[in-house]
Structure formats: C-alpha cells, structure tokens
Image 1 (tube, rainbow, N blue to C red):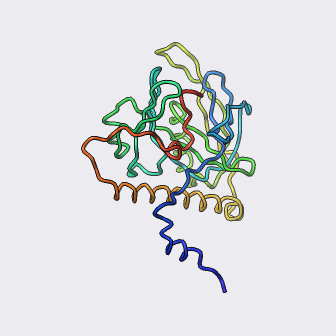
Image 2: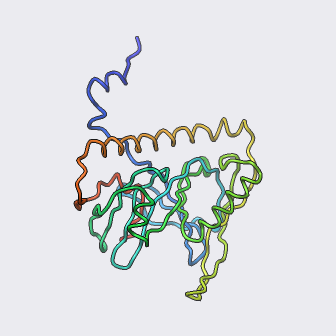
Image 3: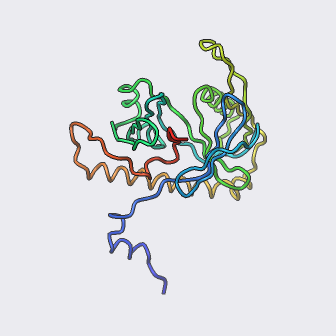
Length: 250
C-alpha cells in the first residue's frame, strides 16, 4: 500500500512551519568594463567569487524573473526576485560593507519605483547551459538588447524556449561619461525541434515554474497572515529573501 506523504504532511500542518527555499543556481554576469562573462557558483555561505568564463556562451531560456535595485557608494537597495509586475515584493537596504539588510518598504514594483525613482529593473534569465541551470543577470543597456531580441522572436513567431541563444559582449558608449563599456547582445544560434523541447527543455520549465509558484504562494500567505502596520519597521533580512543578489562585500 502506497504511503500518502502529502496527506501525512497536511495532518502535521507542515505548511505552517516549512517554507519554500529560494532557487539557488550558479550566476552568470557580464563584466561591463572588460567585456567578458563571469560565473559565480553557489557556495556554503552564498555565492563564491566570480570566475572569468570567456567572451561568449549559449543556452536556452527556461525561466525569467525580475528584481529592482539601486547601488550607491554608501548603500544599496534591492528586492528579491519576482515573476510578474503584479507580484507584491519587499525592498531591503544595506548600508555599508558587512551591514545587515533592513526592510524599508513593501508593495508592488511600480509603486516602489514611484517612491524610490532611482530603483532600476533587472531581468534574471534562467538558462539551460551545458546541461545545467544557471541564471544570467541582465541590467542597464542589456535590457535594450533583450527587448530587441524579444521583438525579433515575435517577428519569427517564436517563444524564448524555442531557440538556443548566443550571448556576446556588444560595445556601447556612454556619452555623458565619455566612456566605452559592454552590454550583452542576443543572437539566435538555432531553432529547437518539438522533440528537443519536450525532452530537454519542458522538464526544466515545469520544475522552475513550480518552485517560483511555491515561493509566491508562501509570500502571499505570509502577507495575508501578517498585520499591516502603517509604518514598516526595519527588520533584519532573512537569508532566503536574498535569492542570490550580491552584496557590497562582493
């Protein structure tokens, strides 16, 4: 006789004291000043130091998340990742190296951007690269290349998961600062067949979707159960809320 594990967990009210973990996978970024990509593996205490992995990589996008952040010399502000602009999120602030992150506001992304105009939006592209899931941080001028890529896909009537995409550093110019830098550009490397999508891509999309939905459901339940104070008190950040965002120490 099969054991109904979900029923037993429900009888123990497991959902009341067990929360879903953040999705932690290796993080890829573009070093904008030098034009090469870096990788940060998941370590015992957050993310390891970045390692140069070269000037290009390819993969298939299997998930897209968003976040807001603002980086200044004396502090940084950031939200956890979220999936939709209608998701409620929390804004944390960290003042100086080694300082704890404190909750300073909560609400919907558009409301937070209105209250804190210096916040900038990022995309986290979860990708299947070389047989493993990683996430690539997209920000600044890279967002322009991202929207250009989406427009190209729309013209071809393709979804992001139907293609293998190649990322390369594209030279850009900041006229205000008189400085050159690099942003990630997207090129379609090849289109995938339905068989490839079903066998290689679909399982990862489904798994990530379930993980993201569990995190969103937990946050919604937490917000519903919590009293809504007029002023949000400063509280120390739970490490699960970080979801891989580098700190000032990195």
